[in-house]
Amino acid sequence: MITPEQIEDWIKEVEERPSSAPLIVRFIANRLRDLSSRNEELLNENIALSTGSKVEEYEQRIANLEYQLELLRRQLGGELPTGTVVSKAETLSLVIFNTLGQVLRTEFEIEGLETGSLTAQLKDACGEDGLPPRLLVTSPHEELLFVFDTGRTVTRAVSQIPAVESSKLDWHQAALVEPQSGEELAALLPVGKMALFDLCTQASRRGCIKRMMRSAFEKHIARNYIGTGIKAKPDATCSLWLCNKDDRFVMASREGFLLTLDVNDMPYNVEEAIRLSPTDHIVTSFTLNQKPSILILTQNGKAIHRDAGWLEPALSFTSRGQPVFSASRRAAGVRVAGAAAVGEDDWGTALFRDGTLRTYHLNDLLAAGSVGSKDQDPEILAFTAFELTR
Image (cartoon, rainbow, N blue to C red; front, side):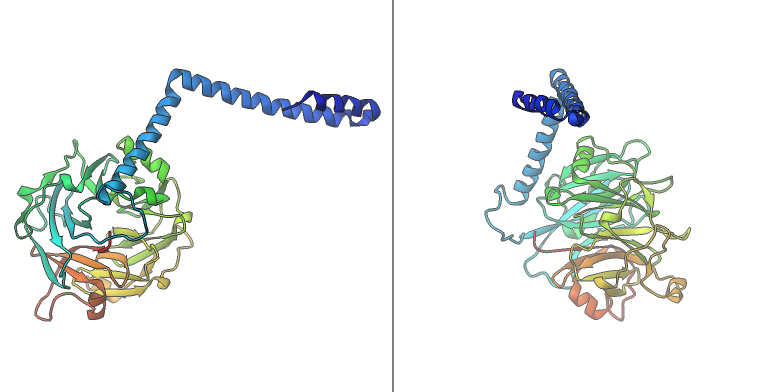
């Protein structure tokens, strides 16, 4: 603010030293321009308030915060945390879904969980679409974001998906998150802890990527649309992941290549990040989240271990990534069924061609180097890793 005292001082300054007049005039002109600009901003804000658009924006922000608070309350049994100790859930939910929007859920006990234990049995593993389904193990109190290949989204609580007896999983019993005309269900993301992360990453089957700041992602969810995340069809979203700015993002391809990027180097607009062969596609993406190891599980049951430090951030978006097995094994038909960043206390569930779903302590799996026995020649269709602590 320009005070009367300042004006008097400037007049005296000009009278005593006329050469300072241009400098004072320039200062006053700049100050008036700033005040005029600020006045215009306030005028526009008043117009927005009077028309209700600003009020709607504030109401939307409040609604987003209340939604996230409700998600956190739900996961913590209705109470906000008073300390730093996080309890272990008594059960976890295994969610199986396919491109048709069919979703099966069964629960399994954590107490007494043993490596290699039979978790569930699925009739007709590939279902009506003929494609391997996708897996997710999560808390029964989670909120799930269903993402279709059109970019449309639907949110649904895990508890709203009817639980089916683990020994009798059948697609005819599946809940339906119904696609609209021509749509396919492309990905599934737990968003219950969204408020604890900075942003969300999105990857497509052909290796296109983008990142969304959490504030933008929240708005997309509120509008039930996050975008397709692709450059051109027939590509489609493969996976989404919540992460923080200082994390590392990894994509794993079917033919055994891993591409690593610092999250801060990821684009906000869709860009093709990896050079894939015409027969290859991205199986999954994940972030390191300070995990010490990478597990790559092949379709023939081999468990490949890499230290997280082995990953090298790509220098450009034209890289093929780092190969996790030799070209001869690739030529022999070895393919990636799943990959994840894992810690010593983590677990994983694998779906076999015969519909068997088994859960493994990942330390044991890495030590053994494979799943199954010498008498068994397993074919793995899908894999997911998870933590017991929720």
